[in-house]
Image (cartoon, rainbow, N blue to C red; front, side):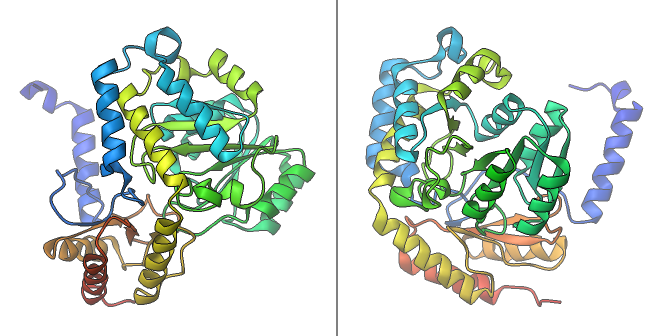
Length: 375
């Protein structure tokens, strides 16, 4: 409990003033317990977080291994489940090996810092990639989103050792032209890091992701990262690539060495989800159908997978739109600066194929009907 004396310290006054300014701009963020709703806000694209086989696998592992991993991966936290998932994920994506982390955020930090050198990022790349280059203290710059000409120009002038992109971008939902980007990075001797967070399970052969869809699986010039918390319905992160990278991460990667391993029960569930996702072509077809329908009704670009973000005016309009949806029992994302790469406030819809089709159709109609006037 902070004392009355402490509350008068300058630091708390400064933070209070900043909070007031954010509130005036409509940028206050609040974590609330989720309630029953048609879920178009979470990232459980294939509905696997509640799949009976996933829950059963997690329950068996919980009984066998207990709640937590008991330590970091190099001390006591590695189990046969961790190693099996790494091998199965690598095989599914065509990578040589993979390394598990407790979150996708830490996986990106680990990968970028391990490959430290001049880094060039797509301007819309996830915050964790931008944070990683800052923490690594390495020279970095951005190229215009999906702009191959700008990428080529900067490859020639800056000669980065690493280029980082997302296969499916997490806010606007568009895809990176990975074949063309890879051709440029290869020609200029740069490694390509692809964040597959929104692509694993949703795009590519058997849901293997954007790298596999681009025909680049197993390419030694490509490293992929992903989270287990989206289409796999679990939690954790992973880095996949050549065996020499795993050796380097085990020996030097601070976010691997010093972080507690993911709970075995969660990884057991993720293993079951990965197997189910590989055989879920029908669900991926339905995901595409629903995403296309949503884009048409909301006048948004057709997404590459299951995420789209119609513009909503300013931050106040966006939060009001999301609140009206919530009043009708529909959960949607509300993204405002700095979370939006184009600095425009948006709703973000993430398609969940486990939502019954009538509920999904009703939700789209409601979202469209409650939309604020567009400037």
